[in-house]
Amino acid sequence: MDSATARERALDAAEELFYGRGVQSVGMDDVRGTSGVSLKRLYQLFPAKELLVEAYLERRDERWRGRLAAHVEQHADPQERLLAVFDWLERWFGEDGFRGCAWINSYGELGATSTRVAAQVRAHKEAFRQYLTGLVTDAGLPGAVAGQLFLLAEGAMVTAGIVKSTEPAREAREAARLLLSATTR
Image (cartoon, rainbow, N blue to C red; front, side, top):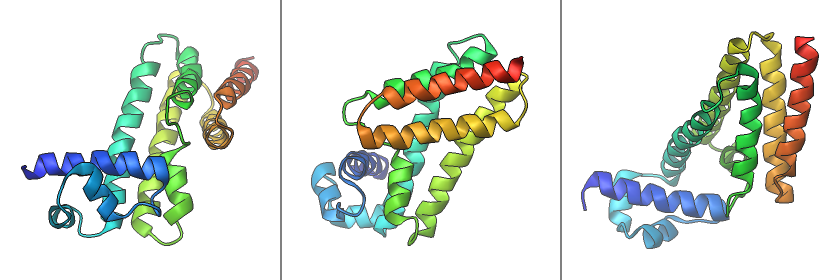
């Protein structure tokens, strides 16, 4: 198996295991067993578990933001695009195996001890916030609205992961709708 294939298999296994069970409860031997990549090859690709966690979060970020953008781009109206963020969150919260936000979960487990993981989490959250800022700008709304929508979305993510429900996305969407309505009056 070439390095690119081994890397993808290792990352697929890491994503399944880290997201499903938590980073701390998964060892490199678990990743080896799920991926079929030998332990020696796994450590050649990722000399430390922290590097595997960082790569898993980075790859997941690209996919997550890509899926969100693809959904939002289906809407032409700039304000509908902002609300579509919450519609997409509701769909994500309803997916089989949803366990909350991978970045928040990873930060909770490793943020105090891993600067690499903390940096990856901060980069993801900043990219999401900047994405919302772009949508807010496109809608001709004050910049402060982006931070408020960001907090609504983040709160919905945390709550949905805990209560195992899509309802937080609907509640956050309604709060966002009221905020947009008040801002455009």
